[in-house]
Length: 357
Length: 193
Image (cartoon, rainbow over the protein chains, first blue to last red):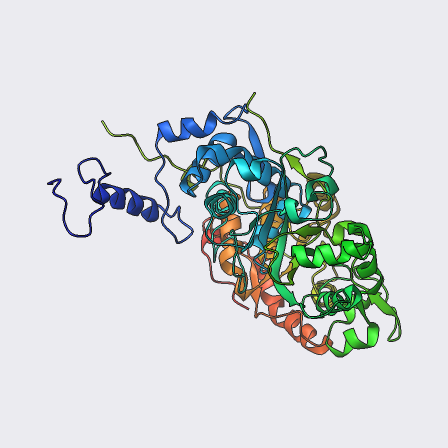
């Protein structure tokens, strides 16, 4: 091998890493079935040590179990997967908090990762860590373009694949899956939100860095930028939330990811986050007749498997505040918000990002 | 000496290293036996298993017991398994027609077999790969179950009964074919409905 600088080379050929060696290492990872389809960062013991140095946790500590497949994941294995996903070592405490938050979800501990629904985590980061690690907190909140936002959810996906052994077409039986699976990590736009940070709704107060997570089944935008009336916007959100297609149980959940413009409009009208939630809780739903006409009579029952409540009965879809978490994200440049369908229900808790102790 | 590339899979053991889950001895006949229906709550699972049970009552004079799975997505807890073993001579479970519930049906079958009870798990054909993978994880590679065509949830009452009748011989064979030695029970694919 020569170190000659040729056309197209980076220009520091004498010190740049050997691309042929890097490619061989990447292919080695593919051959072992570790990849989600995209190239992985091959992990060495020194890199692993850098990750483990960011946490006070014992490398052997079990941080999650999937009882039905008989697999556990410990801190060391999580760190290898986080490094493979492209995380920097300093992201690792956020990966650990996100994984803990996700494993608090009943659906994640149950059959969620194996489900025909193919659900994806929605991860929400709050607090100073957003800026310390360089998260995107503004435009393009759902990605791509920013290393922590992109690699942290990928790390979770690789943990599920490699540490839990849940592979597509085998233990993972997604019918179609969804775009953005293992790719959604929002850093809340706290600076332009009129309300308390989302982590406070999950019990972590005082501006401490924290992560919340739930499983989701895709999302739909609500573009409403031409009305001065905040109730018009609420009715527009109500219409999207009340769609029948995504309803499979009597109660469902949505994460409402509001753009700063919509959030500020509601706040200017005197509404708190709870006011917005309550407005929608009361109104989102369909009648028994509407649901039955679309083959969804089982949704119009009094609880799962319960009695049909009749054609006239209005059936509310949302059960309470934890079935409609409200997050503020994106740029203040257009009034576009997102309705994200929750798979199961949100635990209603946030996990503090651990300090190195 | 270059660094090794680290393995991200954690505590994986090879299939050969897993403790093998023993299969229960087959019964010589279902005549007068206690048959447990473990119903997984999926749409049409109850009428499907009830019809299988009714046909077995007619044919063999079996006594039925019924139990609803605690959570269709995961294997039954240990105390439920113990009760199923105490109350029944054989168990029929299903219908595994989704990612988690088909795997859970296979897992319940393997665990009950190891506890001495022959099981016929009924799974829709779309989910054979995941049922097979779960059985292998549980120490029973090639574990045999009955299959019926996917989907089951959309079938009318009459069609559910037809399906139950069509899977009956496979169910009986899984529970009573004494020719099904442990070796034969590790050959997949014979129980196509």
